[in-house]
Length: 348
Picture 1 (tube, one colour):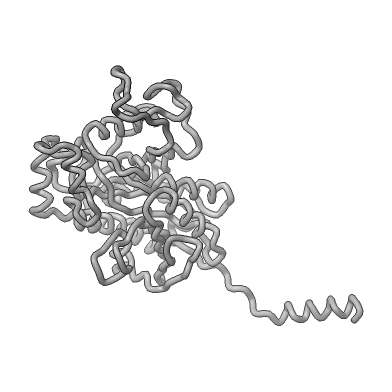
Picture 2 (cartoon, rainbow, N blue to C red):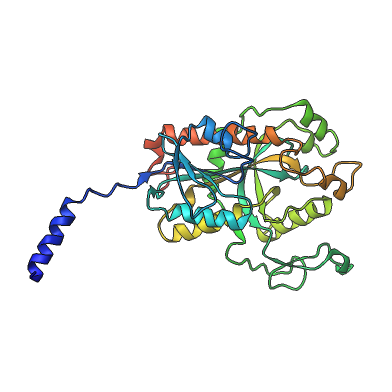
């Protein structure tokens, strides 16, 4: 067969192929980190309320990630990353590179539970993060070998002493989220009623800090993210110092989660590739447990009680994450014509 005939035959075949489906426009991505069992119908984790209440009924298999994706008819995509920064980073990267979805204008709402600093928050409270700081990238020596003039065995990577100046954050250690968007989300949700129960009232009565004794509330604070689940008053002191160090004393540590820097690292790379808009990312953490022991217990004794499903405010914190988060999600979806091309503050 002649080359010209071959070419015409190929062109004819191409013209008769069905048109490739356009990518699905995603308006909001809701990111949860863990689920106890099935996505619906059993004891909930972070994903279940979103699946059931936002009707995320369409399932998109994603073998390259931790879990299949779920979506509703309104443009809300649900992602379940798995626990820890590694699974979060891998899953978010897989989602961001999936050609089935157009994420270029999507808003991201990371919504999960966390430990909380009783100096700033109470059980069931909701924290919109401004700064997200990595807790894992560091040097560490055993507590039994800490020099007497050190306050912690954690040392910034490539430094020789705790909190050594000048600060030199590495890629992935410090994320400052879009402050106007965070403030907008807070203003939209700050008077949201959050559930209070006899159980969490009793739990918070064992803490003397005024914030810890308050009924659940919504606030803006900062998030320390690391795959090590730490606990205790002295670790809380380190967490406050670590966040203060990396933010130039601008940040105020309030919540500790396990995945957010992994999620933000992948989103940063995806933004560099033009796949997502990093200015459209929100992180919401709700307080399931205090990050330290109450009066009368040691850190070790208190740690025994810090298990998923047994936290002092496990179900209330899941309810808070949905109650606060869905207000933002619904606002974005309902007024998509307003937020599609411009952020809530009017910027591009």
